[in-house]
Image (cartoon, rainbow, N blue to C red; front, side, top):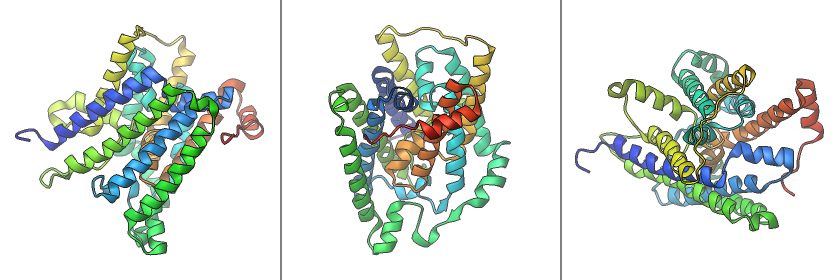
Length: 370
């Protein structure tokens, strides 16, 4: 590709991916927190099924790409042998609660920012800086001293993927095991999604789930193929919205002292995609905090999302879709914890008390498999 660096090429791939998912999120209201909120408060599972459909689509495509030798997901951090079960649980709970305080996830924050929401700009800064500090700075000391010592070493089976586990038990190739598990899980998810007559008629939600799933798989393909440069190897990854915002802030601040990559391109593309869609729909408007109390809630939520997201190795998209697509063992732990933290946070906001929120969470939980 001439003088174009591998990192710049991947940044371009991330930019394209971000443009698509930003437009989809803004146009189709694809939002994980919104899906949880609809389910818990309104017993409406259409957006939840759309999000689950994205997981199923991404999972089956990624496992096929892996078997084909394209995605190289075995080299991603999702399938490393260092199984951070405690981080997935603790970080997921913190991220979920923070998400409830903010009213959206990291992905949704960028989408709101693209529409002119100044509250989202503040959340973006706090989330990004906290995530960067947790990965490489001061708050990372807590993670390294309290959480990481609890990690399990799974070198014995080759990594922390369910495909590694099945491969070790049945003594078959890991990629074949991934196809078996991925295919089975995807079929179950497809069945659950489309058993709902309401969802079958929700064409916008179906299209959003399919497109997001394809983009996640494309992210793994892009970093797997383009990133395989022996002279400039790049991390195998896909969509994630916790650490990349922090890396984007650092890149914008230092420019010549930092390198652009897939994650930075993804963040910029998501904002741009949401902006273009909002402009086309006439939805661009500046929005600010109503009062100091709302601002405090957003600041706390953004901090918890940044710290929790890095500790859990991902957010509702990073672990919830990208991680799930790789069949990582930490992904369902993080995802379940995020759901629990978000549900508790919603009940806390509605009831105004911890005891009342716990009681509501225990006695009035919704059954999503209906």
